[in-house]
Length: 264
Image (cartoon, rainbow, N blue to C red; front, side, top):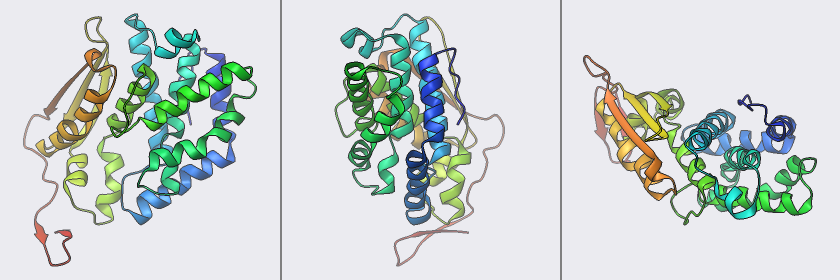
């Protein structure tokens, strides 16, 4: 996995430890067995993790540019570099519970994560700091969906970054496996997601669609994550359909007795 470390030596070491951690890399692979092969969902393995990690760090750095202090820095007197560690490792570990079960996977993830976090952080922090950083990581992981109340900037960043991994390449897998529903069709409508910065709105999200069905991804899924986060006041979203004729994604949809949609 490659992420921009921006001369953060702690983050450089954490990234190195993540890339060589056999247990973590195996859990990413196993998460995709469950999500993709068994449940015909989108990628929940290393590709998803790399995308979310990069997005999360970009969001955090945009907030820093606007002078917004992460909660771990305010509440625990940590450094900004530590907030990057928290955001990165929460992104890297948030979905590993899918290897066990999709249902309640957030809690499965925090059950599996502590020994991995311990191994990654052991040469970075003394015991007290390491424990604080670990609890902040676990909170962000647990709250990356909207089922648990979120209390930190770092958690809000991970939650929104997770929701922003919506470009059509990731959605191709379940669609090609024959899964036809509003989730797969709307995800295939998302061409591009970009993030920019202004002083007034540190996180400006622009979403380009090839079909207006993509609005489901934004209004139903992403909107809930943004509104549930602690950083919604710093975020704006603009979505538009590409100029010209909308792309046709399916030709026909049949609802048969098996209650599964079929595409033609």
